Amino acid sequence: MSSFEALEAECLHHFGVAPRKNECRGSFIKLTWFRGVRDRIVLNDVVSMQMYVKCHIMLLFGKVLFADKSGAGVHWKFLPLLRNFGQIIQFSWGSACLAHLYRSLCRATRVDCKEMDGPLTLLVSWAWIRLPFLAPIPGNPRVFPIANRWHNWDRQNYAYRYKTLAHYRRLLDDLEEGQAYGIGYIDPDVIPLAIHHNLVVWSATVPLISFECIEWHATDRVRRQFGYPDQPVTTIPIFYTFGIECRRFRLIYPIVHTSLDGIIFHCLDYCLP
Image (cartoon, rainbow, N blue to C red):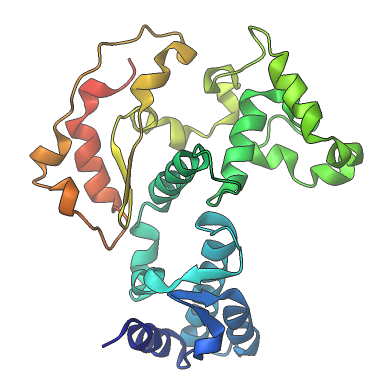
């Protein structure tokens, strides 16, 4: 079976229809096809509702979470993950998103790279939280999720959109000590108790996995930002422990919560105190 035939079979399984070749770009399905399928769905039973949600998820992947540089298509490799509708919530999509972002940041450092893909909303939110002098004026600093404090920021701070790249470069060049914040500077009362319950996860040094993309969540590199001393560089034999050969490793599913917990408990010695 060719790659396109596999794509067709997967779409037929989920939506009862398949895109034509001119509605695809290699292994990417154009987002316009998903929008067309979604808009034609009649929500009269559970199956049609699930189909609608799957279309929306694929659009979310293609535009926000795992977007490519064009922002016009989404890879069909995500479709098998939606086969078991009840299992979708069990995947650690956040870990996969971070892995995708870290890989995109690495590629963006190349001298010949002019654009960047990935969850850039997450990157901008990170910058606005830790470098508040770059951010628009937040409407409500006690909102959670924290990034929601800039919801509809363009209406409240319209002039922000007209600031130039040179303006932000000058701000970064003039950066002084104390202008960069860590997450510890955020009022802890803003963060729900349910998230504080898994505080150890925040600082775990673990692999973040999204298909063939494996990136270390290297919290040990930022200890000084949180007031902790740097530790000597050590080798964590996680891949040896789990029997994974990195050079030949190609994962076809994002890591599952239960598997992630197993890795985290194995790495408690590598968390920030």
